[in-house]
Image (cartoon, rainbow, N blue to C red; front, top):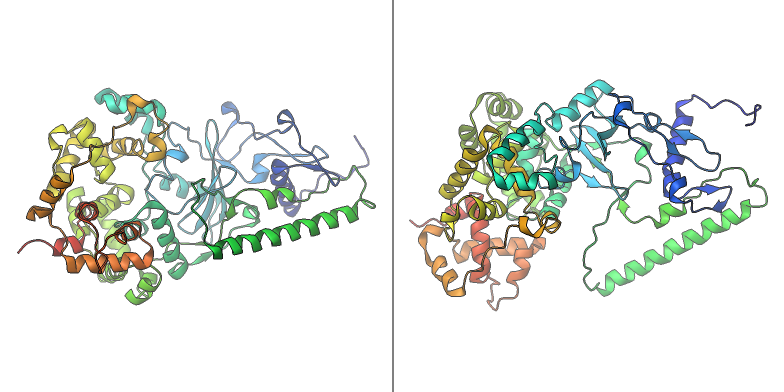
Length: 537
């Protein structure tokens, strides 16, 4: 130890620099200018001990670079949320279709927006950790913690409820060990409602894109601190399609630019070898260039209803929202005309209106059907018994709870029967219990479950049966004229459904009868105004 070495600076900027070095050290520490690949035993990660974790004061340490200096997680800004994985598992909560504002990073953390806060979340063995990178004016660590705790509905004891549900239902009891911490969020009602208007006839990745475009176009830009610098968004591992010639050229240009940047960086490093003492730590971000992932991008708050009043249908269509553009603009206008304003109206639905009445009230808004309304009620309005019925829930209900509905068409009346049945099994928090059942039906989760717990796929209906179903007036199919409008709009936005329809031989690119059935069932489940128009006279 060098007694003449100056004491560690208490300057916050120095602490920030040590935190940055710690992050780089985790990616690939360097001693001097020589790249080093330490053994796993020498990479000291944040060590969590349940008896040492206190609210706002996390004990642990993380390795830095060459000189062995360490920085505590508190210095790095991580704070304990004080909740166990059985109460909150991020992987079973954030990417499951409740919210569309979170991005998983290449190092396994989550970064997203809660109100006006940009927040990082990390799943630890016995806790969830968070960092707030920016927040509303006047916010404190206490108000930040309260906002995050409210967002995750931590006032509800999920462990106790899970024990009750496991005692009441064998399906839940078998799934519970594999799917802990499936929480229901308590989102801002306006954000939740407009997000699920975007979900109509859509898939999760595309909904994410729409929500982000809505925020970028009409929300308020947020400016997180430097701790997110260099953090990358994880890139999903998908089967790659054959790239177009234009994309191949762009990729080649990008590789060339990256190679030139690396060569320039290596040249600068080589030039320093003559003057830099070997013992002096020098961090060179080779790993940042090689780390898999994409930039996180810019962060925005979700637009308020007042901000959305500036969005016209034409603007939204140009941004790729298709027929949903009319619903977004129309709902913003309708909410703004409510007595007391949109926020007051939605808070009243949360605090003073029963579930069914709140659901009916929401379906009076443009583009909001029973399923979208149920989502808003469960995810933002404290209607804990609400059960949004989509294809996954319909299939699990027929398989495990209502086999008598096999072959039936999913109508609003049948949806209500499914809800009532699930509430009869699980009680007033049936929406929370159904969430675990729903998560088990997601493709990536289902594949990881033991074979005996996987809901078997539904038997495919024969073409003749589908044709007979198509002819039934009770199914409220779209007319060809209405279908043409939907297909053209979806085609312009690259909808998977629209792309399938291009395989047909019809000059107008109509969906096949089988594909039409899929669209109509989805629209019927959501009470789509387009589907409603197709009711027989």
